[in-house]
Image (cartoon, rainbow over all chains, first blue to last red; front, top):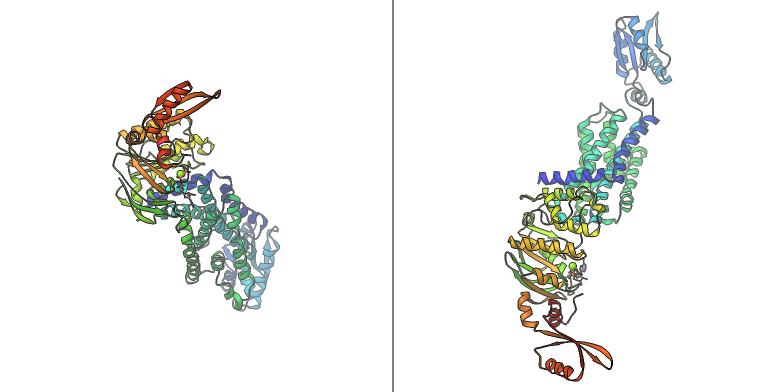
Length: 333
Length: 284
Ligand SMILES: Nc1ncnc2c1ncn2[C@@H]1O[C@H](COP(=O)(O)OP(=O)(O)OP(=O)(O)O)[C@@H](O)[C@H]1O
Ligand SMILES: [Mg+2]
């Protein structure tokens, strides 16, 4: 059975490579990822680097370490050399009673402002708990806008996997090849899994490449992949159903695109609804997937929450799958 | 090899039957012709035998398997050549065969050898999507032989092919029959049935009217016929008369005595004429 699945899968890949529409769908997420990186520069890494002297106050060093990436140097000379390197780095050194902040001069204002603010906060004795949450997230996470765009890109890539399935099914229907496969020892299940693997694998690879392009290297990859795989189920089911219901590729793509509506609704709901109204989105697997991805991308995810979210995605998708299963079975026989 | 008992099928699940209570047996090694006009229920029957259509009424055993149960491994023994060609247009001829071959659990034939057999050598690296109708049909036909089937379903194997290629296909079918392959051949072409089949069934409106060998049918129904062309009122008239019925013999004498005879030939009845005699219908 496994080898049959693999054979179906490799034929799917071969055919997808020869279909201009499929190729477009495969490269689209990557293009979008480049777009996000190009149009949100500077948002790439707003974690501020601060250079300090070894001789500095221990409490000062510890304080700053809570909010920024701190590098320690032996002497003033080394600090200045470091600041003059290409990346954004602010040095904070004691001068008389107070501190002086040294910058290379080409840093974004944000870095200077942040360094100043941090130091001022230390001087007035504010601790982490008293500091505003905005300040905290400002220092330690990537821009919320970028995270949102990348999260949307993941949702879109998942939807595209459904489109790949639909295109493949429409192709089989046009060539009338489903009958030919039905008179071989390949079971319908192997056939469906082989096809799904094509859509699923392409989507997962696209997502991983997109995350690298947009600079999310150090997220929890296990979580991203788990969330990705579970949210694929629904898209694949929609792909099969729409592929069987459509007569040509354009119609199939248009039909699959319709799931953009609940996806977009879920994203808007998650981002804009007040906490007490969030429950109104609980029906949507896209909501749970988006939420889980957001937690992973902002590195604030913990396993219990991720398992809850993927569990919800799984349960809701399986409900749709079991509703659609008779239709898919019938359509493929 | 095939045993069908009281098989009925309705697409609309009511009393409108596409196949109505048919029964027949096919022996191992036999080439069995399923003949009938368009809409008779030939493809429907083949669909049920190959498992593509869900069996409703009756009992069908194919190659030792009850078709009601889903047992995909039975297809290792079965080959199906479809009426409408169905190959992957994005794959080349060779890729189509190689992919299909991998789906079986039994040894398969070499794709190049099969392409050569159906006259598609030189085209192996062309995409099937660019093939003509006849070429696609040959590729579909070649594909059905990949797994050396013991039981071979052939739906209209030569329809729409030019005569030279049709002759090649007929030769291949004969060769396979000589090797012991059992074939279920569906057609509305009586000549093919006559040439290739050990036994034929006449099917009309979903019912089998008769099953026999072409030879017996000719002996039984196809007594000698006489074609006469004669002049009547300055015009040439043509009549076909049987040498066995009293009425026709009297008519022959009458024509010979009273008219100028242009031509007069005796001939064997074709299977087609027998079909018309038995069923009262033309094969269209
Ligand atoms: N998918 C279908 N849905 C409903 N009715 C069908 C379907 N396929 C065939 N029929 C009907 O069943 C009857 C038998 O059709 P079938 O295709 O078996 O004929 P056939 O003998 O193969 O004809 P042909 O020589 O034209 O291929 C016809 O009356 C046809 O209209
Ligand atoms: Mg037919």
